[in-house]
Image 1 (cartoon, one colour):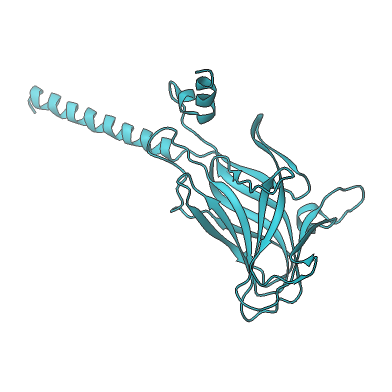
Image 2 (cartoon, rainbow, N blue to C red):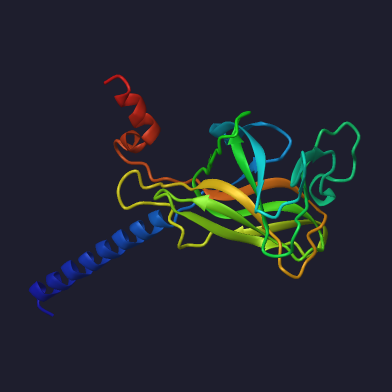
Length: 259
């Protein structure tokens, strides 16, 4: 083989190797994840602080309210659905020892005057107000789960999230046709956007509400459902770059607040 041809082959091989390294680097960067499990709501407190390592991911002061479809039972001032906190919990999560433990679950007592696709919404409100509060989700959600107590009713439950465009998406969490506590979970569908092409790339979701649906062939005259430990699995990894603070919406607001 002539020396010139050998040099050409070496040059081509070097280009292929560099291209492969670039592709691998890009692919690896896009697929780097840092999954973290965060309890969004234990249903025992009104102030919430979610910590990731040594960093506070989010904190908020919110409570929960109920709303229902038109056939919810009302007798004068006795209005359904009703809500309270009860000193009971899933033993699979906390164990059975009740001594000295301040653990609560949120209970819903429902009644409707007619069978059908009735619904009850459980949604957060800011502090002691009646203003709906949409909970910002840290990172990019991959999964959600919650412990729900059921009494073998043919109902089902959904979670609702708003994306950065303002579009609300429903995520089926599961059926309630079982008895006792069960951990219901769901993956966040890939068609729900949690990122943008331009900076800031991260476009996290906001939690809007839970919705319980009844079905036409199931009784609705009197029922109870309990919630505990609403949790998310989220990818909090973000690529760092020179000047990344200028892509942080919070930091940008701080920088421009004085102008």
